[in-house]
Image (cartoon, rainbow, N blue to C red; front, side, top):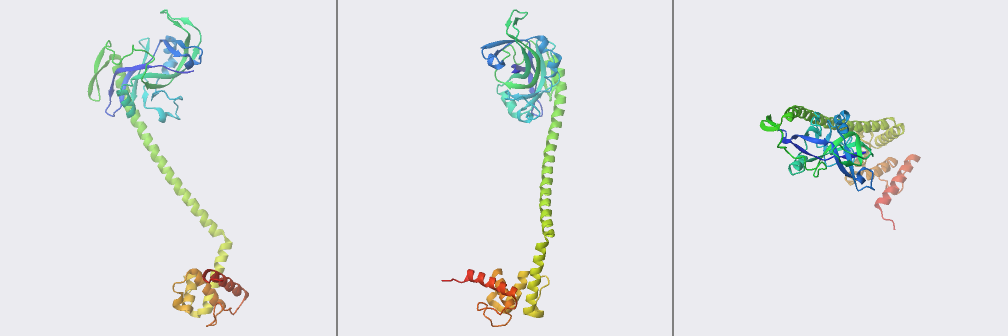
Length: 356
């Protein structure tokens, strides 16, 4: 079963030179805590008194599960995992889990997200541990004479949430005045901390700063690697498309043969009309046709389109005798030329003459 506790940050939280907020806080306690019946699978019960005995709270596995837990703002609707850590985490719990006072579990923690720190400084200072546990529905009475309805067993922490309201009650306050303190230097500032917390915080600040820097470097490197991989992928895609196109062109024998045959036919016709004056080397098919038409038709063909030039060239090739009207009926030299002229005449007539 997934539940949550609420306690309060204490231990004189302080800002680091990096802008983080570090503190030492009580995050779990023994005793009876009240839950709504709907929270723990008993909707028929209004309020359920759940006993957290010392053997459950200070169990080694339970305490170890509280180390290195992500910190969230309020409880997410799902457990925090590696898959959604980046979405929910605003800080981290350290690994110095202390339960020596027999009632509270105390841990070092650090808030790393600026907006989370602003919420804390604005008054959102209480903590709620999100965890799973087994509920033993055995009612009883504590050594202090308090009745309870059920007992928590096998507590396992998932995350620590910063919340507004504390289930733990008003006994947990920021900066307990009864604690014996000593001055320690944090980021060049002298502060008072409980004696047992001073050493914990000093060690934790050293390791947390190093871990944060390492994580930042890894994150930046990952983003750079991702960008580089995307760049390489895009380049590879372009290369593949280009190679496929080149391969298709190079292996399409039909296209190659048709292109070569068309060019050879145009060159042959150009030389039959212009003789040695025909220049074909290094010229495109359109350029060769334009050369022949310009030589025979003159300035009238200066602004003609490629289609007009093609029609004129086909007509000249099929009617090499000067003075023949291209629309009056060509002198056919062969069946292929006759078909070409017929198609050219029909296309030209359709595009340029109005037939009533």
